[in-house]
Image (cartoon, rainbow, N blue to C red; front, side, top):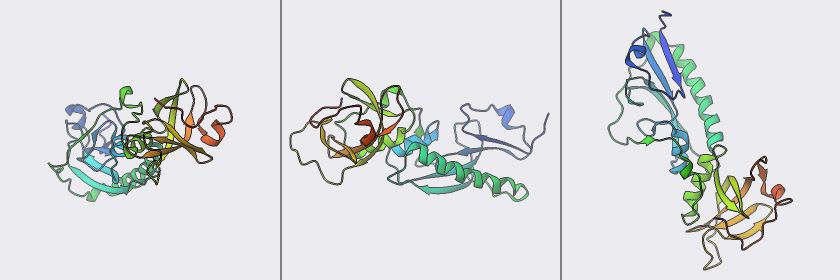
Length: 236
């Protein structure tokens, strides 16, 4: 009954039915946080980070009945930095999206022609499951770093330290391979003001922000004051 020119959807968790998509005079448009057709679906930002992608972006798409399958009006690319977390990248993409949408809506009388998505490179960003959030230390350091940054700050990757389920919110891959031969994955190799260095299946990561159950996130230098961690202990 409103007879809208445009229906605009962003971060909406349901597929709109055909009768809704046919309401607007011009189009139903979706703002999607990836470079389609890569990472169609619910968790595109997390999946891009967890997979170690070097770039992502914002796509304006004319909606169809399928899941993020519609033709594309415009795409803006954003590089993924080694310091990006889910929260930081989300904030950057939201600003990109706001600017893109504003320009799009200001130009409704002269919109670009929507182009069909590529048929190659299609993949789906399924929701993050609880089973994925636990850190498997036998994996390579780069994969563990991707996971930590992709899930920070929510829901958060986690591990068991001294019997507690601790969220790991910030990490980086150590520049040098671990020097201690024979240390099993998950072993704490070094402790410094910069954080704790933990052995992985290949290489090691340095953790500098953690969160204990029911506590606020803390830099390692703050957390260590009330949570004694020593070299040689194992995270599981």
